[in-house]
Length: 203
Image (cartoon, one colour):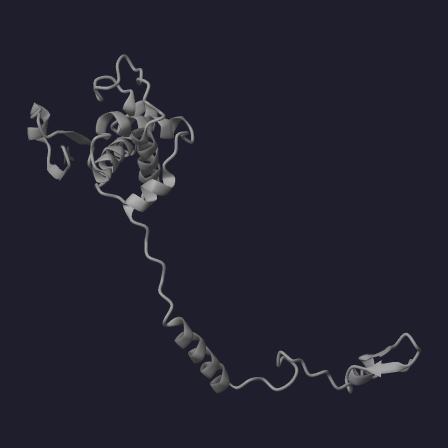
């Protein structure tokens, strides 16, 4: 039996549709405009192009981060996105609607801190309606807020900013606060951390 000699050039040959043979081994590949099959651009040329590109970007300013006030204005709404956000907005509205935006945000953060602390109910609504915690809640019922007011729309926005966590004011260990015109006994047993507006905060 005669052994066939493997020829990589011949084995690369094939037949075109018109019956003629073509040979991959001897064909001249077309030169790509991308430089994949032809001359590869030099590293120096690439570096020059990159340098020009970066120089062009040097004068472009990054967008300024939105201020807290701008975020509140953009997120203000009448409708809340579910029960949890509704409970948090109510806490802000009834506890701090006369405060600055920072004061309202701090109250929202205390509610959220409690829910994640393991020492209070694990939901925002559970924290808000917990017995003897928030004076505006009576018998586990949250009263009706004036949802047509600017204060309510702002409270919804504050709740959303608090949940996003992009403008934290308080440490996650801060779980208590009271108005600055009262002096509850439990305040002496805790560490005071912040005073924001009319509220003093503790951990």
